[in-house]
Image (cartoon, rainbow, N blue to C red; front, side, top):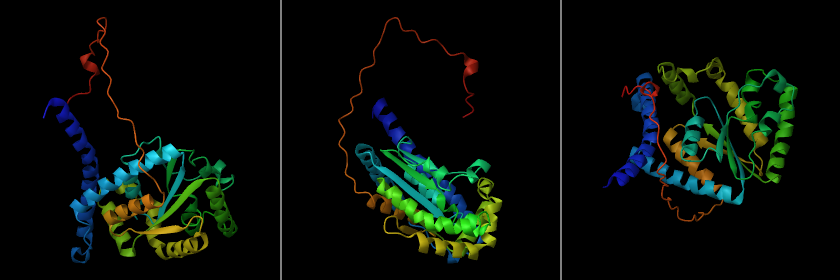
Length: 301
């Protein structure tokens, strides 16, 4: 193996290591869950070899889908909803991991400002919708009103009812405009959320994920369940149906979600012209000035 081949190989391995780094994070979480719960009752994850093989294969298909979206100037919106710690973020990371951020981006909106509270409810979401050739993944969406806002009392009964009247028409309008709208609900059990919350409490690298609102979601589990059931019943429409992802096994959930997402958009592989690296131009007048030593980042490692 010559030097160029070695560098290409190392670059490929570094790309795979990105997923390994995230998996190590998962392993720490699993260990903390086992400490906090009865390990004998835990359901084993899909085996690692199968997981990596399928994940990399599916991510390769996502790249083909991305090319198709760009070539056909499609507009794709994917909503990710679910309880806190249900695995939405992990799935989104694996979907976007190999894609071009100029094509596929994530919209994760903060709480509305005072000005936004006076706007049409859907207004702040509309500005994040895709143009042709773009995919937008909403890490939580306009369904905040049907979930956290309802349970925590951040909206009135009249505002909630208006939301339920408006959202089917809003989504039908999006679909009529040419947007492909896909909605996922990540479902986990009471026990699984309890275990994941405990692991975050005991993991200093994960504690930032627990907000006071998240802790309240444990107290109000049953209220969130009622809100979820109403939401699915009233907003599951033919033009934009809900798809429920079983999220108890996070690895299976990621694979199943990506596999299903790929099935929702008929795509074909786009043929690209072979890429030829041009020869570098050498000019005898060119002189590369040395960089002062004190400008370099110290080589601690």
